[in-house]
Length: 279
Image (tube, rainbow, N blue to C red):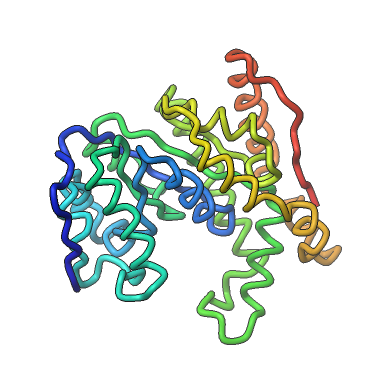
């Protein structure tokens, strides 16, 4: 599929693992783009999503994230290939970090990777996880919009109702991960991270034991500047759809996760206002 060369690459034995996951339409790609602004982080975009499934999860091993192998794209691993200009630039920036020897964390984001967190935990040494969590009505509205958009590769069956099924699955996994992997799971609230809450961003970076980067802060301010407009223009569900989400989404579990996440911040002196958009 094409191998990207790395001259003078960093020794992969020094790397830690970082995975980003969550229900689809919860901002996983945006978080990857944020974290990759840090010189110590290299997260791929669904790099091995062709392996992260029931049939092939046993192949999901640490050697895939060695510096040379990570940039050696092979058939059946992903459809997000560096032969496109966008992804060539994306992976080119990660290559440069390896050449500079700054990388501490390597990993990838796959929205439903959480389905296999126990298998991954059995294969990788103490990886860290950033788990995205978004208000279920907003997720449902995004699913519904994508399902009705002509010429969109998004499946028509992945509508409002399917969103709740997927969202509930992610909430169940996040609760389990938080209990089973203490100190290694950061529950990242969509409404807080994308509203421009610098203090919350600092909490995320501190979770990785990394220093804040001026480049990251500048990028963050740019990508969150339109938050108010995004909230205003967000697609709204019909009354029937809203009632369906309210009746079938695991709201109690969601609220428990938010409360525990907030409590954890409080214990570390990071109390701040919530900037939630519950539509």
